[in-house]
Length: 53
Image 1 (cartoon, helix red, strand yellow):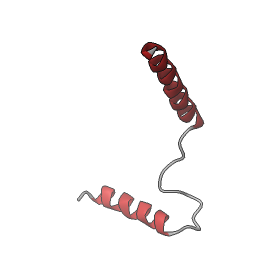
Image 2 (tube, rainbow, N blue to C red):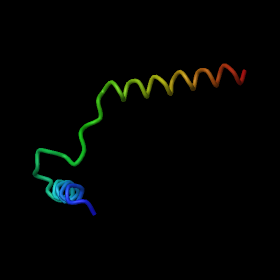
Image 3 (cartoon, rainbow, N blue to C red):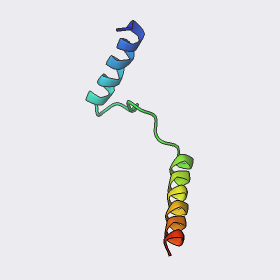
Image 4 (cartoon, one colour):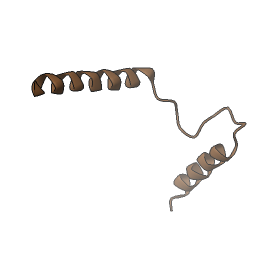
């Protein structure tokens, strides 16, 4: 394996094993992405319901 990849993997595994750490293994999901996804699902659901009638 690549040395840089191995080091990053070890760092993330250490973050998962240490619950006291302020930093998480992944960055938090942006609220905008979450809202856009929910809006897209809502529009798709309404469109499919309208089409089925």
